[in-house]
Image 1: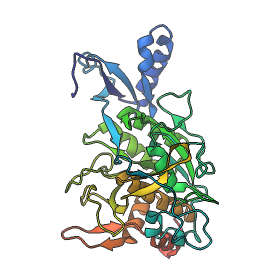
Image 2: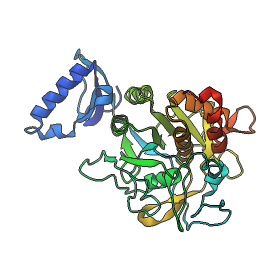
Image 3: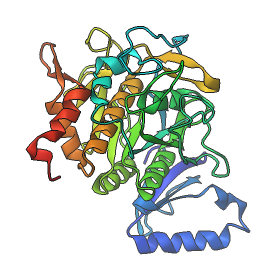
Image 4: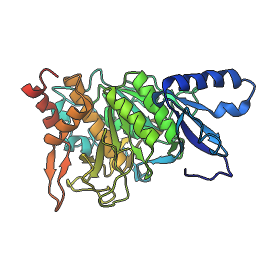
Length: 378
């Protein structure tokens, strides 16, 4: 058991089965009007668990209907500090496209795939800092979401990271804004991170639970942590078994042979970052556990209050991959998570690097591969 026993610390308590979990929640609902300390209990139905603050776990360790107890760890979004405030560039724009297409989206050949798919009818859950519902480039794509920090409020962004991610995935502008990878996909913001870009594992699990309940097709996770969480893995495994595709950033430490959780989990598509020159970005972690790389260096996208900013990070790379998967699912609904992972890896652009196979996502090839007979009936 991690954490101190003297100070109150958030923990995740998992029950042995759904009946025990339900009994606990029923008792909690009866008692919380008279005990204000119970207001910090967070139900996590997807894994038959609750999150709450405890001074000590000793008394609970021997309770027969409790499966496990773990510290409710914190994690951070995977992005560097803001590089610069920028205005959209309108050079090198594909024909018949209004607004601008950022370099990363051009680089992966997404505009060339728009004749086959633009992400129509695909619902994407972005577990992040929220989104700016007033941004002109996002108004068309932002749908209902949830604020896990305060369920009485809209999932409005007070950091900027989530708005940036949303823009790369699905921004669309008919005038002087930008276009995302899948400009007709639908974004459901899931606000789990505060204005400092920090969140508890329990909030991530709550976000996954919300996405599964709301039949989200893809979950974008542009964040991570070093510690392994059995509870988080259980939630992601349940989403995977429900057919939800989970895409996660690998981390920004520039380390060899290591990546962060949840990207390290096998049910997840793990993403690293590349530069304009098609090289691994110096901040990107490098590992055989990374499934695919994508543009993540100096990516400009939507920002708060109708603005645009450049950010670098594996977060930005992850949003490119999520967008490509939206194009694929719109073209061929019903693809399973492992099928999607296999298709994007088999149809990726091979980058040269000694000792390790580096694959960069290629939107046109991935979408084009769906016409092959192997996927015709899936």
